[in-house]
Image (cartoon, rainbow, N blue to C red; front, side, top):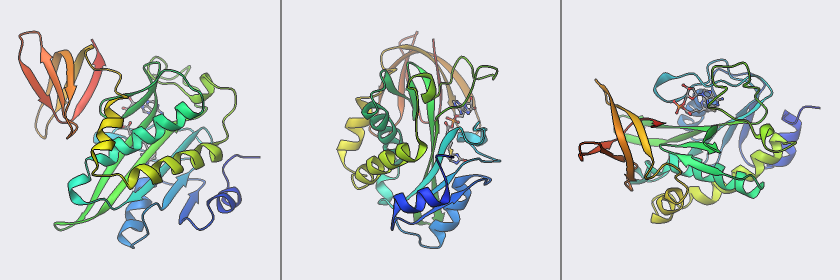
Length: 254
Ligand code: BT5
């Protein structure tokens, strides 16, 4: 029996608006349609397999069928709080993994959830506008449940829950995660979100190499990850003593 099916989800999710796909391009694609059709906050789209699962900046998200929990969750935060949505996703996942008894769970800027410095979860918030009006935010989340990375290019950097705990039922994982997402999404805009997220960052004061990405440039900065601001910008102190503000990018430990 598969742990994710239309029937199991329907009986567990009750009146929550949800859709389940055995295969879809990306749950975030479908979420965009539902947001535009006025689906309520907390609507969730779940897939067993994605043919075009994506990460930030058009990158590919690896998720062989049956091995991950992939979902998109709809929120309509105030426009001033859209920067909190990615934090809410990472925080909800980190708390869920903690509650399962998993050790060494941390958040790596901007929003990777790691176990022992390996990525177990990626978070992709996408903001939907109509002209200058905010329609809502899609919170895409992918958790490696039992992905076998041994022969993959990600063998050194990725991890699955199955590497640290014996058995995971994806429906149980989903229910625990939705509970956390429902709680934290009502807090969007409050300083509690940043404080809780910040307390879980696992790379502050570490030597790092950062690829800082802007619309036209990519720059590599080597230094110490000094702080992350409430707006989510990473402050790097480079070897020459300068401090640089990175809005979008990736960290590799130096
Ligand atoms: C992310 O992007 O980490 C966001 C991933 C979000 C995936 C979910 S699944 C449901 C929803 N629908 C979608 O289409 N997407 C969302 P980023 O920070 O750009 O990381 C992407 C990079 O992580 C890739 O370039 C790889 O290096 C690495 N990667 C890819 N698949 C991975 C995996 N399964 N586990 C760990 N690392 C992975």
